[in-house]
Structure formats: C-alpha cells, structure tokens
Image 1: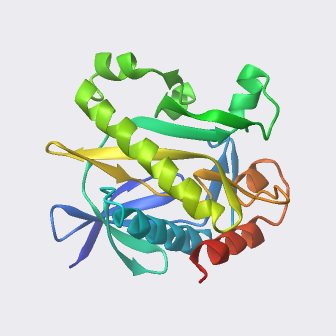
Image 2: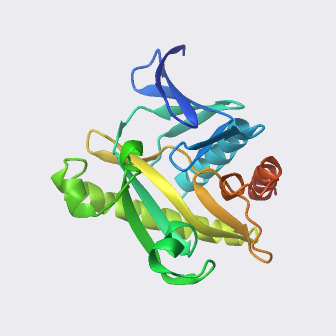
Length: 235
C-alpha cells in the first residue's frame, strides 16, 4: 500500500490518502496547542507516544466490540485508519470535575460525579467549539437521531470500559473527548485516545498525566506522557 498526498493537517495530526480508497494514514505530530491554538509548543516524542497509546486502546476497545477506525500501527508515529465522513461534533465524557466544568458551574476540581456527564461541542475553532445539544445536531444536518443514539451508546460503553481499565492501573479517567465518523450506515469511533484528549490523574496523588501540564505550564510534560504510556501498556 502506497502513502499518497496529504489530505488534511490539523493541530496534532496529519492525514494522508493511500493507494486504497477506503484507507488513510494518520500521522501524529509532536506539536502541542491549547486554548484553540492560542498557545503553541512541542512535546518531545509526543507523536510516537500518542500513536502508541491510541493504537493500544483502540485494539483494547475492539475486544469489547467497539467499532473504531483503526486497522493497524504502521510506524512509531503512524497508524492505518478507515476513511470516514467525520461528524463535526466532539463528545466529552466527564467522570470527575475539572477544567471548564468547574468554571461554568462553580464546582470544585476533583469532585466525583454521581453519574457521568455527556456533553456535545460543535467542532469549530473560530467559534471556540460551542456547546450544543442533540437538536442542534439534527437541525444542522450533522447527525440523525439514530446516529446520535448510536454515538451516545458507544461513548457511554467506552467510558465504562476505560474507567475500569485505568482504575486497575491506579489511574483516574477524569474526562475525555471522543470523535466519531460514519461510513454508509455504520458509526465508528475515530480520531485518537491519548493524553492530548483525556484528563488522567494518578489515583493516590492526583498528579496530572495529560496535556493540562502543557496548558498550565506545570512542567514535566514529556515525562508525564512517557509515564502514562508505560503505566497503560506495561504488564
């Protein structure tokens, strides 16, 4: 299979066409951004670490019959993925209060939610990814009621699976972002699952092992990413 021209470049990844029409190559970058791109930098080996973690977690979720865009890991920072029509909605699952949830609702950081919160955000950097609800998704033509029902079901199942997986490694899955795509009538989990898209804390110390260290100039970002990879993928 041949890697062909660049199809899309985002803040954290590049996506290339291949010689097979239904397959793409997703390349992870070391670039780091925060606050809708207002803050920029690089994290050493981030592309390789996020590719490794995402591949590992996609494979793990496939064992639980979660449909993903992932086919296989191709290199240190590349994976082969299914070509999808990406739904421009970010799904955020929140298990513990952090980030914007605390600011919006005056909730102390670290408060455990009695029930997971599922939120929707329109993917639009110029509008700063505004929060929407299911009716916006229908009205804007981004997804049908049946598609949103499938997305909610898959997202909730992913949350349950990963919360347990992280807990066994003495980690807390605080919150995380998912993206989905569709092909014909099927919905697939897309994008990535990594410390770029999740908040993850050590269960005992609440040490942050995710991109919040970059967002808030906490230092030790590359070390935290490596620690997370080793704890997730270790025996």
